[in-house]
Amino acid sequence: MANTSTNITVTEFSRGMSEFLNHVQYQGQTFDLERGKRVIARVSPIPASAGYPIDQLDALLANGPQLSIAERKAMAQDVRAVRKQLSSRRDPWA
Image 1 (cartoon, rainbow, N blue to C red):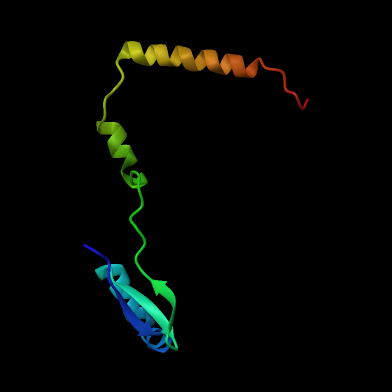
Image 2: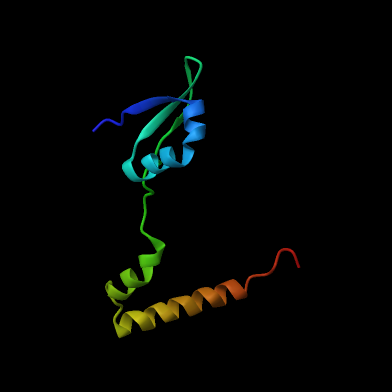
């Protein structure tokens, strides 16, 4: 479905801004603002953001695949090895 726009004057928009913004937010409408006979701005909804909602991340991780005990031990060994390697590096700014 193509997003059609409605032309309104800047004066109309300024007098009913809250109402127009409600139409944009809740109904997805787009308004082209005219000054004189020229469109100078467009007010439209922004596209939905991509990605996973951060407030649902805990549930995703809790309900996702779990590491076995052997996998956890192997991962812990890997983390210890990386930490040891990082802590043994000479600080170039020292």
